[in-house]
Every structure is written in structure tokens, then in C-alpha cells.
Image (cartoon, rainbow, N blue to C red; front, side, top):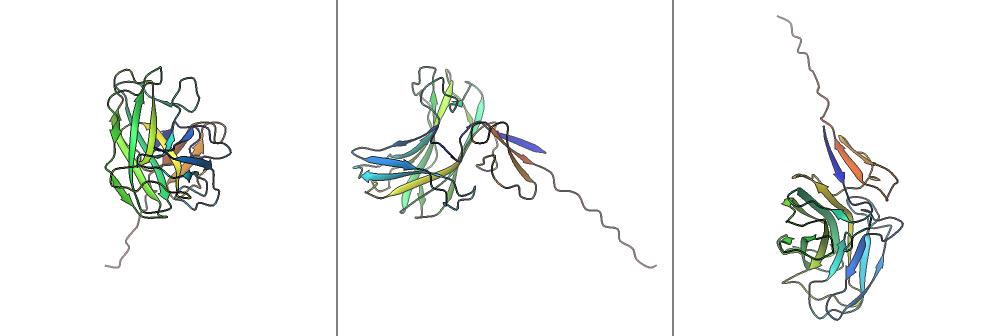
Length: 221
């Protein structure tokens, strides 16, 4: 049996935007919403950024994890420890996306050593999983912030363009089978649960071993 703990306490998100935010991008402005009919791999809830003023460049999108200390949604990190991050995302148009981990010190300053995924082409209205596994927190790390931004090779966001994300996951350890939250329906060998109040606590994914099946062969001699 393997148990994974999502340390982000509002991963769906549901009921509030706590821990989620938007990087508008150069010249841009966007509004946030929480669709309840997204039909994503981890359910219908998501966080959406919709641009009301176009950007003039890429490097804009959704982020999760607080950028200041003393916030319960902060993604905890200890220098020298290993972490993994994952999320499901989709956007309204073909785009190039980069998934990143930023390490922060106790003052909220971004430390050298940001970890980036490859710039990845995603198709419009298609849910895509991004992950960064087995990443070691740099010296002086106290917490982290995760970004899901348009990137080099992409197209600036225009008015009414949007990007969504769900099941934002931050876990200690080198492995992470999937983005998850505690409200997902149990399936097969996978069980999902909250460790406390739903959408306000850490959550767990437990993967049990498949039950063995014994087959007895009987034949006449």
C-alpha cells in the first residue's frame, strides 16, 4: 500500500480562491472564477483566469501557493528535502505552457534554482497533466509557489481567452502518481480522503495492492 499526501489545502478549488492567483502578464488584466462544470480528470471544479485586457507578451497564467508567510495555504518546503508537484490544466486555445516550481525564503523572496518543465504545446480545450517529480528544495527554502504560465513559442492572451487548472498537488517525496484532492470518487485500488475539513486541509491518495486471485486447476488423469 502506498499513501501520498497533498500538502496544498485548497486543491480543487472549491468555495474560495484561497491559495490561487493570476499573473496577468505584461499589459494584461484578467478575472478569476471557479467553474463547477469543467469535466476535468479530477472532477468538475476548477480555477479559471479569463483575460479582459490582452497581454503583449507570454509568461502569464495561473499560480498556486501563497507568496507570503503565515498563510495556511503556503506550500511548505524544507531545504534539502525532496518534493513533487502536479496539476491538470486546459485553456481556450492552442498554447505553449510551462510548469514551474519557485522556491521561497521566509521573507517571500524567490530563490535561485527555479525548476521548469519543458515548454509544452497543448491543444485547445484539452486537459493536460503537468508534473515535476523528485525536486530538491534549495538552501533557505521555507515554502514554494507553483506556476502554470504561457511560455516561449506561445501566443499572448487575448480578451476572453481563458486558462483553467484543477487538483493542484504538492507532495513531499520523489513520486506522485497523479494530481488529486480528497473529494475525488474512489476507483479500483485508489482511495481519496481529507485529513480534516474538506477543502481546508491536506488530503491523501491511498493506493492498495490488487487482491490476489487463486485459481485451482482440476483435471482428470
